[in-house]
Length: 408
Ligand code: AMP
Ligand code: MG
Image (cartoon, rainbow, N blue to C red; front, side, top):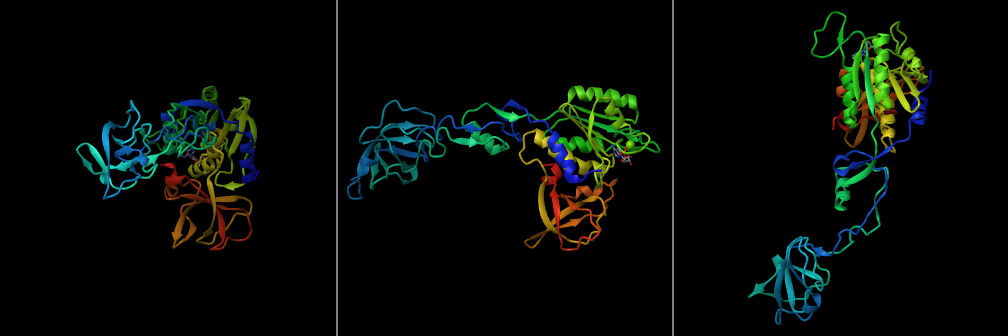
């Protein structure tokens, strides 16, 4: 049996390098960018007006005063999107709208709110400084500057930056293709009548929901009984279709836990089986070529914990994330905990703000077959194996679940 840390490390070492693909910018949200992007041109691309008003030449206003105003002839109007047909000459002004290109010769803007207009002329009573209310070419981003680094996650604002450069496509890391196979002869899908001895299957929906929250649409979702034949047929299809196989149930030591045996027949090499942890001890991880296989123990809390601690980082690493793990914090715990002597405990926990101090409390209903308290959980509390109790107020490691328990 190996430790949690070793299990995470072994998975990290076996995850294949992320692959790249070009996608349309419109569909890139949440992806990890696979290339540095440099500005193909400056932003703004040309000098333009920051205000609705009048564009003029600052030097024309040098002698202007209230006693001796300067009159400038309003010659034309520049709408956003217009291109001037002639430069602005001495003694002239153009009406101009926000975002419109500054015509040659013009170098400052008098906002509409400050302008005095009479008989088609602008009456200037003071000096208007050069560059006033002008957005200068390249003032935000110079041509050639790196605007996005490889490895960055594409947020709506990132899409905005790339769109400003007119980019239609962007190179990102491909999300892996994932199959979800749920095993257990006791499982009944929703909508069917529950017979004695049977239970409704929740794992397949939990796993595919977490995948959806990661923007991974499973290529195959199948729930099957504990029978070798159907397991073989399902695995065959899953290997053909996917990079990662996630199985739940059937990896423990029960007489009908066939998953490991059948995987071995498919040539899957066992990297590890069993981790000293609770819940989720019988977790299996194997590899066939570049394809990864996770066998998660069927108890719902085991599935949830093992997914977030092992599968989630592997899938994120394959999708190009530099920091694939759950975000980790050290927080004071609100109650005393009795650790296990040999296994690390993953407790369903909730962080709380006490004034300015953040603490964490374990929730009730910690059993590995219990899933209901996970609804309120926003973290796992990790209690390492020990003989000594973890005292109230002691700092413990907390692995935070994604915001909104993954639903956002
Ligand atoms: P196993 O890992 O197959 O030994 O299953 C361990 C426990 O988890 C058993 O009590 C199963 O009934 C339960 N279980 C397995 N698969 C599911 C599932 N898909 N949904 C809900 N409970 C399950
Ligand atoms: Mg089972």
